[in-house]
Length: 78
Image (cartoon, rainbow, N blue to C red; front, side, top):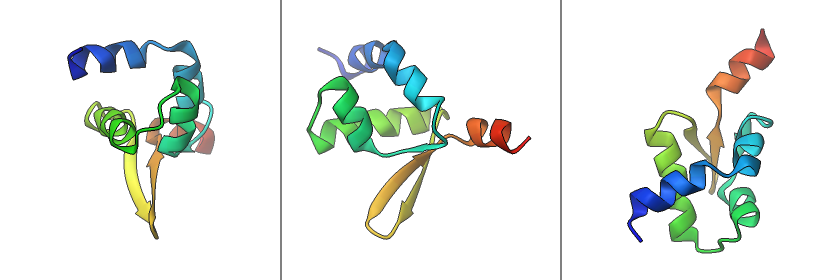
């Protein structure tokens, strides 16, 4: 299956949308647990697609990469 088609299907998971917009940051493992994927490569591709779509922003802290939802942070701060 083409990666673009899988990504679109990935975005339409209700629980994923709920997760993305209920926490100001997220790690790939949390999304992996939700969608049942354990491949770090696959999860990184999905997370990078969310970054490219400007839904999330990546930030490396130490050895961990966190994905930050800036829009949600703005709402929380207001």
